[in-house]
Length: 412
Image 1 (spheres, rainbow, N blue to C red):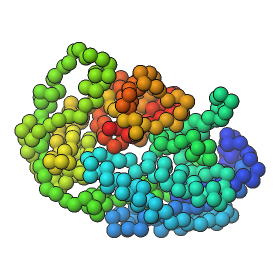
Image 2 (cartoon, rainbow, N blue to C red; image 1 turned 90 degrees about the vertical axis):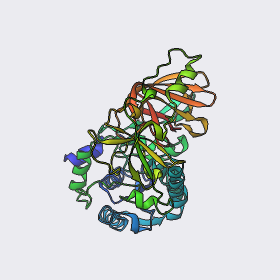
Image 3 (tube, one colour; image 1 turned 45 degrees about the horizontal axis):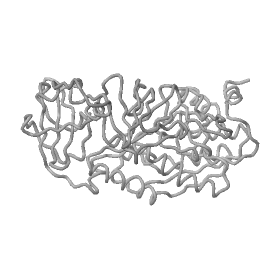
Image 4 (cartoon, rainbow, N blue to C red; image 1 turned 60 degrees about the vertical axis):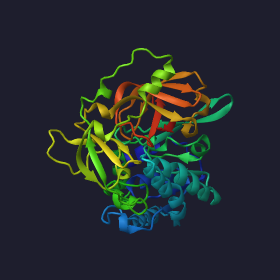
């Protein structure tokens, strides 16, 4: 038996004869192999390509243009002998993702469009189209797995991390609901990336050696400042360097009236002023920058490189610090308000006053870190065992029990 057929027969997705699956074919190798595996397992497979963007003026043209991708997706569908169609979701994408992004950047927060694209587009708008076409499931090329357990007599779905630790994409799906997971399939979640490429090569798929795409979900690589300047106009302001010796970094509070008061203190937003540092340069808009950013500051002559430690979009000031160990970059706790708190496993949701030891991450590909969740009346605190660099408002924190992602929230 060839390695290819071996991998197919070992695949854990239960063989269900002629259930209809619609695969979001992106024109990349991962979704191509997802479609191939499902066909081999006896599903009726249909490929759909999502067109989410029309404006090529802000994309870097030789990096993943949508036209090439849709063409590759069509060629893969032809090779597999499955029906193929392109659906134009650019209107919904603009409303739900792009407008949200502009709004968040304007408020001085840094959104994660990939997480939103999965929640709002792939597993909502796209899923509804698929179900209207009679699909039993929607499948994607994400490196993650779905588990099913019986709890209190009913099926509960689990979002499990992918077997390939280097490619695990469960974080990007941290906002999915039980209803969305019920209809989702992740055919490559048990595989390593080299195995996926080997399957594609043996199946003679055009995407076998194609580079992984980068940039915004189904748009490609975007020049972010150009993209943001469509609505957020340039506005000159100052770059201020805050020294490591700033008094705020040395203050210690030994006694707190409650654990909540301590968490409030540990997760507080820094309150810098221009007078506390030295003006070292100028910028064209604080809303174009994010905490932890190093590129784009264009300030030289420092002993160590400058990093953004905070932005003030009201006064249009960027606060920076020298070196990646600058204390202004680090915090031990963060807060998620109730209206931005989400449990995939609703049965595990904490009640006020309850705590839970978890593993958590604040960005994709970050190693999981030990943390404790504390539920309070206004939301949820996440306290890490070790200080975290560049905890950024608007990004998502996701928490796991071993390898199961159980909940997430937007960092306030």
